[in-house]
Amino acid sequence: MGSTLFNPALQAVIPALLTDEERLTANSVAWSSGRLVQIIGASVAGGLIAWAGTTPAFLVNAVSFAFSAAMLTRLSIPRCAGSPRPSGLGAWLGDAREGLAYARRDPFVARLVPVQALTSLATGATSALLVVLATTHLHLAAQGFGWLLAAIGVGALLGPFLSNGLTGGRYLDMRLLFVPYVIRGVGDVALGLVVGLPWALVILFVYGLNTATGMVASTTILQTVIPDRVRGRVFTLLDVTWAAMRLVSLGLGGLLADRIGVASVYVIGGVLLVLAGVLGLALLGHQPLGRAPEHFSH
Image (cartoon, rainbow, N blue to C red; front, side, top):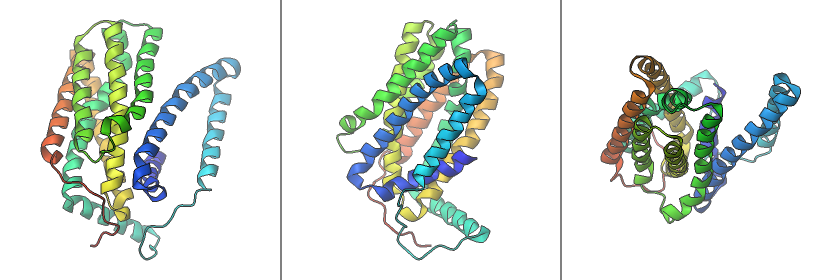
């Protein structure tokens, strides 16, 4: 619940603090620092739990959230242009209606939402079932599963550093949104078909590299093309759509893994993800993109 509030607000605030030229670099730094902190945090948490137990580790984590919140309160965030917004439940419902109206009318967002829904349906189960794939299909022990996570982490850490070079500064390119779906889909199919740790490590390294590059580029594109006034609401709509379809994917994925095996789930998920990428390219591949206007009129 907290993430549903925090993540869209974060994505909406970044463009208000930075210039267009700074945005891609900032998103790259944000993604890389997040992955690096996850890697370091997991190691620190393991040592802290071994030394002092689980409760102190959770208390330290809670303090870190409090410190983060205190730092965020020091940010000076400029208000979007326009008259002051009223508060209260009625105003919130009005904001939600305005955001949905924009999503229905805007050709970019209206086409992106179903593509994101299919993408979440394809990836929810495969993301959660990696540990099952490692133990039952690749026949790895706990240490082997750790190597799989490390391969993803290294790829995800390096990906954003390549974003500027790969895009050549031309990040407003719809292919950067959907080609990564196709690449990951092919990788998921390959994970369901291959048996062997070396191949799995290569596939998951490419997966981490590809996902990181795609996430940085897609976030930057959305921050650029969606107007300031509705940016937070559009990000919320995309987050809620993603979360809802992910729940469906998790439920179906667990049932199918029991009935036909986890490898088959990866093949099915990979095929669906390739279809999502192709659908996105077909619907939005030639969509003209540019700087969003500062105001959105009813």
